[in-house]
Length: 145
Image 1 (cartoon, one colour):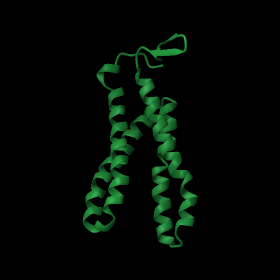
Image 2 (cartoon, helix red, strand yellow):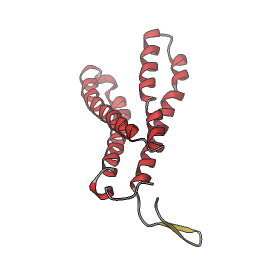
Image 3 (spheres, one colour):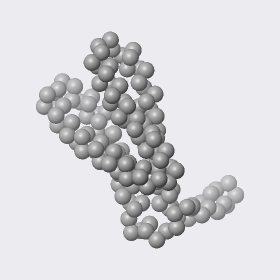
Image 4 (spheres, helix red, strand yellow):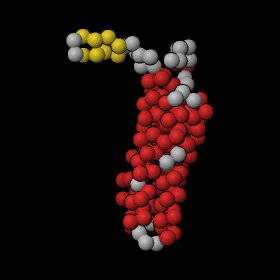
């Protein structure tokens, strides 16, 4: 746990631990998963096309896997950390593959798709980098609280 000391109303953190970083990643993943799951009822009002609703719900359920993964990381489960790496790698790789696909086949909507997809891919890559950083040599000999 990071050691804190207080100067009046100012609190200063001496060192960021791997647990602090993993807690941040867990919160980000859990928030994104919760956001995906809470939007499922919206998809039923968005369209009356059953195939569109089905695709949207399946995508939201897959994205909603981030919620239990984030909770597992917060609880300190190494299997959840491993699952998060797989989940984030898949999102980054598939995201990098879908942007050129949409540029070629759906060029009239490409600006909207890139403006939505690129920041999400960047955020997932940053979370993945933070996970790798917490398992690096810098944090290797630190006691895990």
